[in-house]
View 1 (cartoon, rainbow, N blue to C red):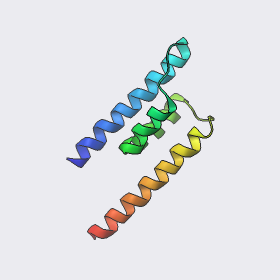
View 2: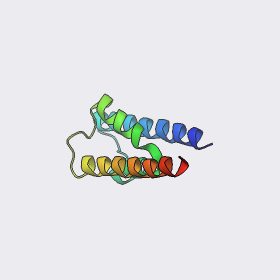
View 3: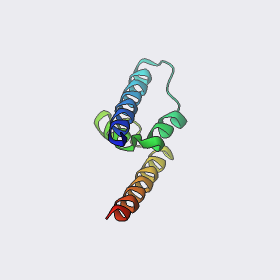
View 4: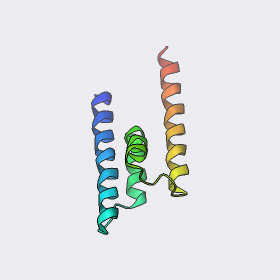
Length: 87
């Protein structure tokens, strides 16, 4: 069940980043950075990082970039702790 959730949230996050990139190119209404970071926070960090690199979107924007990497580090620590407790 967790794997399915993570797959879905990462697809949604990737699509949100792609949609925001497209809106930026067209000069249309954008997805807020807060919403993009919220998607990353609730499990979409891998999708956000992949989208950021593949689409070259928000790669230089600070503090967005640092916050996204901090979330990735937090998730890595949490997964490491969970894995350690399972062993």
